[in-house]
Length: 224
Image (tube, rainbow, N blue to C red; front, side, top):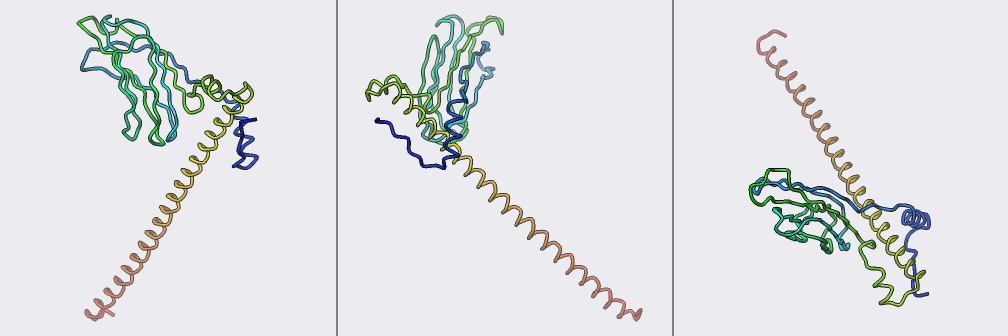
């Protein structure tokens, strides 16, 4: 068999990952209505998702309408760190945008429906079917099977292997984030502790100085 699953993680983690690959079925499809709005006052309609660095993302859009029907549907894809992955204009029918993520970040798929002419607000709209595939789900497995001449079982094992690798990578990323947050928490705790101790020492020193000053003052006035 040409497909090899590398056991690079503990068996318990691999079992959970395989179980998740079989049981958890993510739903990427979404249908929405984007109303046309006058130019200059368009409020985008956005969908957010998270993607890991170097992951393949395929955004499939299907919309009704036609060019010249009084509205222009535009789409933009940008992540939370400022990377832009595309700005298709005047979408009609089916559209496909593929990109590779440059960072571990959330990305937004936004739609703007610009009204053309002076027709009343809200009377025009576009129906949008949005489908976002990430990682192994974004690959064309039929093409992979034909190119590498894989049997159906080998192709399925190959798909499961990539799904498991993605889950393990995501678990590693979450563990790193948890480690970073724990380090930040411990650092903050140490700073607060030292600040509290410093404040206590300052207050004790100020109290002793006040006692010494008052004692000296009363002695100078021959009160004690």
